[in-house]
Image (tube, rainbow over all chains, first blue to last red):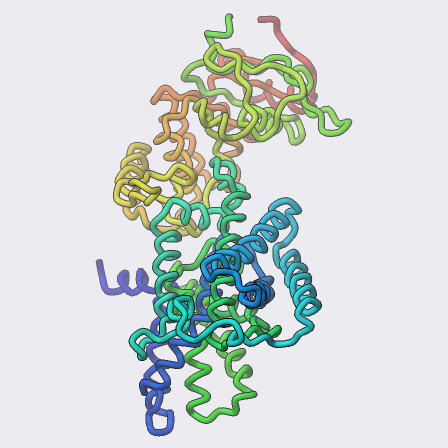
Length: 326
Length: 251
């Protein structure tokens, strides 16, 4: 294999491009932050605690995008699950029952989304925009938008908290471990399992997939279930970390998750993408955030930089695709 | 001839879409190892007939026999189980997915727990593509990077690998250059040499006449004729299609 071909091959994996930018960003931030604090333990620790929130959701959203569908309702699945979780804490339900019911919340919402999208054959963007507003409305009405702390019912140091929110050995954020777990699990399913092949071909050419006997509705519904599950998981994990339910958990996550997937090389039209890409995309976005804050950028204006970065990535991805398919 | 002598025999097929009659009392037969040209103008009912045979539609009336046995084909899966494969023009492949994943789309070779056996999929897909006389080296190349003729080759390799008994090609040459069309027609001859029957649906009588041994002409949902190549000519066929006149001979 010649050098030229090797390069084309490497670039044909869209994730490799995100990786390059990712590494450059790390170096730039390390150099330009005051006192070179980017690689300090405190910053890495807080990144490891916070980044998995968006990351876990983006993995599901990206998977679904590869299958050719969107899910905006993640923004509401997250706080709804968190709300169910604290309500059950208040009722004194055993923690393991609480865990199962909370995770089922997302599965139910995901199942509804899946059924609506596959039966109506309408664009999922519209359907899940509707379900997002529906669930959020219900949530605001039933919580009256009041935050609810968990400390009244849950003593610090419970097994649930150790499992989902406490640092391992006091140093390593357990959230990062869960994130990696889902990256490996979903990466395996998407790239090495039969089901993953179905996801790709449905996103790429649904007619062909159906003609080849793939049950496209079933595959899509399962993808929505995965997204719902991940949102519930993340909603509960976030609730344990911030020690309360707040009604505005998850606000904006629907588009940030899509942005992460796109930065990681996922196509908005379906059929193209990778778990590694989504993984890098989501950390890239959060590293930009964290790095800019450390460099002293005004924190309320951070969104402007992120927005510009997203457009830049999308444009670059387009040119990379052209180059590698030549 | 009796039902057993045909690979497929469809009798008295009717299909309505609302009040529109798409097919009226159509009979259709394919023998073992032959290439049948199914020709007719737009809206003649070719696609409807084929979609009934491949399980996308069900007939409102009529019977289908496969290898002499009466069958009900309700889904594409039923058709596949019988050994009927359809290659739709430009619709059979996922363009951004690799060749080997396309060949095995929906019927992946797996190890336990549904894990893809990539190595096996690579070697098998390359073996079959080679058998067709196509020269492609990299099973991981995405389909979008291939030429039109090569893409049809990949789709045909798929049906060859899965040992189809009947392959339906819906306008396989429509978007191709002259050279690529020739290549695709060679694929069809190759299929027949493997003992596979082929239904070749096309507008292009010149293409059909090169390789089909028998022609069935449809017009406005009815069968106009069923004629062997030696008993007809391109002019004759095109005259039939244009005028839409019945010429049904008794068998």
